[in-house]
Image (tube, rainbow, N blue to C red; front, side, top):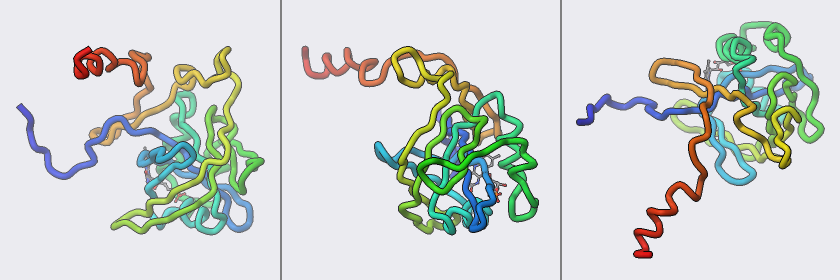
Length: 194
Ligand SMILES: Cc1cc2nc3c(=O)[nH]c(=O)nc-3n(C[C@H](O)[C@H](O)[C@H](O)COP(=O)(O)O)c2cc1C
C-alpha cells in the first residue's frame, strides 16, 4: 500500500558534489550541490540558486569544476554548503581545502577530492527558482589512488558521499551488487521468447 506524501524532492540517492569557480579577480569560491546530473557523455547539469556566490562567479568566468565529495572530507563539503561567499570573506580558504588552477579551464581544481570534472559553461536556463546550468566536461582529473590496475576508476575506492533529502542525511556509496546492461539479460531473453 503506497502513501501519498505530496510534492517533495523524493529522489534518493542524489550525489554530493562540490562546485568551484573563480571570481573576476581569480579568487576561488565553492558550494555544495546535490541537484546535479550527467546529461550526455560530455555534459553535466547543475541546478543552482542564482544568488549563490558560486553561480555569480560561474556567470563571470564561464567555467567551473565539479568534484565528488568523499567521506574523508564530509565536514569540509558540509561547511562549503552552509557558509556563503556572499557573506563570508575568504570562505574557500577558511574551509581548509586547497586548490590549483585547472590546466583546461579557468576554474579551481580542489586538491582533496579524488575525482573532479573541468567544465566550460555552455547553457543557463532560468527555471522557477534555480538556474539549470549545463557544463561541457573537457577533462576529468582523477587521483591515481582510485584508479584500478585496468586503468579505470574503481568507484569503491572513492568513498563517495550521497545525499538524502528526506532527512538531510549523508551516506557512503555501498558495495557493488551487479553489472549494468547485464543484470536484466535473462528477463530480456524471456521477453523475446528465447
Ligand atoms: C548537502 C547540500 C546540498 C546542496 N545542494 C544545493 C544545490 O543542488 N543547489 C543549490 O543552489 N544549493 C545547494 N546547496 C546550498 C549551497 O551549497 C549553499 O547555499 C552555499 O552556502 C552557497 O555558497 P556560495 O554562496 O558561496 O556559492 C546545498 C547545500 C548542502 C549542504
